[in-house]
Amino acid sequence: MLQNKRITVTGGKGFLGQHLVKKLSDSGCRSVEVADLPEYNLTDITDIRLMYDNQKPDIVIHLAAKVGGIGFNQEKPADLFYDNLIMGAQLMHEAYLHKIDKFVALGTICAYPKFTPVPFKEEDIWSGYPEETNAPYGLAKKMMLVQSQSYRQQYGFNSIFLLPVNLYGPGDNFDPRSSHVIPALIKKCFDAMDNNENLIEVWGTGTATREFFYVEDAAEAIYLATEKYNKSEPVNIGAGFEISIKELAELIAGLSGFEGSILWNKSKPDGQPRRMLDTTKSLKEFGFKANTKLTDGLAKTIDWYKANRAGAK
Image 1 (cartoon, helix red, strand yellow):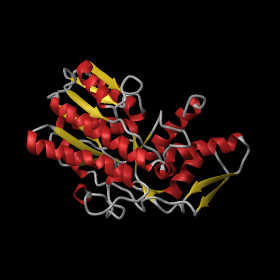
Image 2 (cartoon, one colour):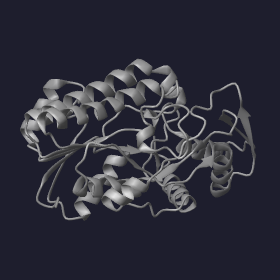
Image 3 (cartoon, helix red, strand yellow):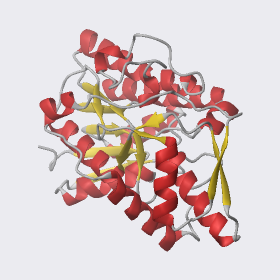
Image 4 (cartoon, rainbow, N blue to C red):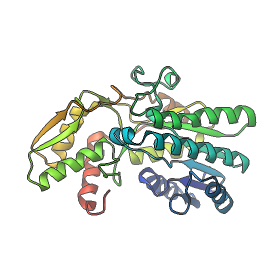
């Protein structure tokens, strides 16, 4: 049971972090701390050690990451590789040295090979190289899986590795320089309506497919895994469906009230051709099944954006 454990959430001020901290608090966890900027720079070993000494966690849930969409991945591949690699490796090593009870590492669907058979099964994660625009980020995060399994084998250290699919929901990142596809499309629709424009441009051909995971469902999955799962084999967490980017763009346009046209910029990359997770293992191992329908989750996200546009990045 988690209620009496001292829990630290890295990246707890971020999009997923805020929802997870709320989930932990709502579930009766009495000691939940956040490790995030500016108090702690988790690429700095001195700050990591200071965090462990100050917060003295029993459990660390590592959500902190440098992340962005295809454009950001192409612009900052070295930053994405180094920052994510060094955060994960140092946080887990210091967790072992501080003898904490459990380390929960969040990976990414970008760790899967470019042409993974759909739906993605956990045993396929090493069957090829990731999609090129995502590879530095995906491989950096996947090293936590190697570290988790190595530290369990040699030290008996309890760590788990979860593979979430693309997240969305209220409080998402709407900064066009680094946002993912759903907030980017929502912002494009509202900006076009503000400017009385009847056309928005979207990267790629629209044929690529994606799976989208509502952020409150993701927080529930992480909570259940933290409470019940204690193996180093990776586990997918997601909603278990796929939709083309073309269908997604049309759905968001309709829900947003944008009645104009969508121009597909085919000179830009699609990214990975298809993405959808096999989520049977998360149901079997810790009883998780996503409950939020895509249309409902998008409507909630759009409502949040309309109410918070002035402050939304």
